[in-house]
Length: 573
Ligand code: HC1
Ligand code: SF4
Image 1: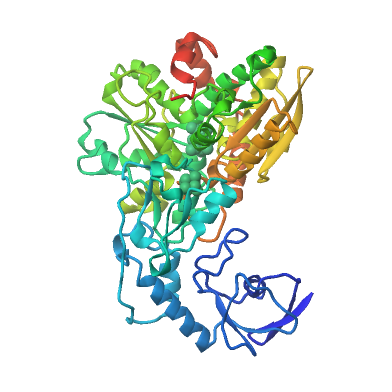
Image 2: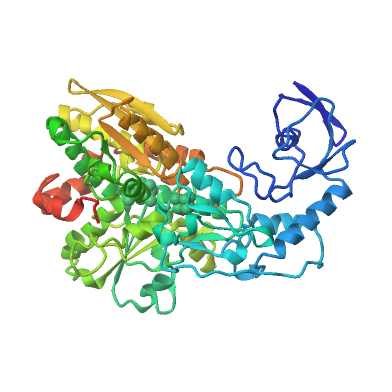
């Protein structure tokens, strides 16, 4: 242990502890801006400087460790003056038009500057702007970039994709797409992790609210029948912005909010998640029967960020993907075919919106293969959880007065197995529950496959299904996906079935979810999904009555001709 004093209070901390972590242990607040624990500890912004007795120069606390006998001052006048100057320098290159900024009220620069209380004095501003393709789902605004380097590090260290790099030199130093590329050619998976880890609004998701909510938007002009679906992981995150309790923020209250917004039909993507399990589970059992005809493992195919990654990094393994479309796209195809028939509406007269925790879903819905009717996209617009929350706020309603409502039927009911799709391991667990039933005719204990739960980036299990040993793995985060694929290619590991989610922790940690500076929320959100699963009266996808009815009335059976036409794709588009 190392004995030190912080603001004259003695404390002992472990050797190797950074000054910042020691201050946090001692409950002494040191502001930070570029710091991201274990990912970006480079002292670039110099906001975390502290004074050390006997040393003239101030020291950045995030990347210097404690020494025996050190006496640290975290908030001396000298420290506060230095922080003010550092923030003024940053503000001199930052577009400070805050009132209309998407991150206003949730911006770390705004918070640190406010807390420093430095009055009106600022330095002369030099703002640079660049052109950015506004039709890409990831938007960069150079005039807001504070060169903290978090995006560079998260994309490289966590997602193994090096999309960002430092550009230019000296006072013109900035961040941009690496190797001088355009973002569209940079192998960006659209996971959105650089967005959720950006402390300001230099990176954001494309705003697609206008065609839905504006005066000329579909909800107001009512030119078409409007339909909305909501993803599993949204239900555990939307209420964070309103500080609602888990109990109050029920899925039914989310349905109530969507109804209040004016959608004609409100559906739950969990219906299609159950449908996905029927298709993907049956496909897996088929592949197992004809082992030698397939390249192994079979990968899950519901995460579009992961699919973009595989296509750009390991194109020779694209055929390992299950041919099942994602639940979002299955739901879209079912809405514009089966449901359209039911309400006697032409598919081109249905406007289909989805609320998703994911940036890549905005690109997935626009793929040419995701138009099952030949009349336009099965999902017309994807809005992220943040966009949904922003619009909710703009409605100026008392959220405590939100009514609970039922999702519409058919296509609105999901089981507990579908709810856990939103967290790492959930798709695998749901698939195993139903594969076991499909192979043996008996239900397993619904919690039998709990070994694939948890936030570890790479989990594995060996399961006995009807006398066959099935080796499965679950990874989240693209860096982990790369490690797993490299190990498979070197022959070090073998799996039959692998679930991959691009975002650490799965969709609960998605790039379109509410942002909380310095806090990773995936684990907390995930626990809520398991809670909802355990309290659902049905916990097996193959027991979803609406899914069974859809097969009876329309699809016939899993992997039928109709199922293939509407619900499968080869992922080569
Ligand atoms: Fe996901 Fe999925 S779980 S991909 O994370 O398979 O986005 O929530 O909607 O499509 O169901 C996201 C979440 C989501 C799909 C489902
Ligand atoms: Fe990298 Fe993901 Fe950001 Fe794309 S969205 S630049 S892959 S972190």
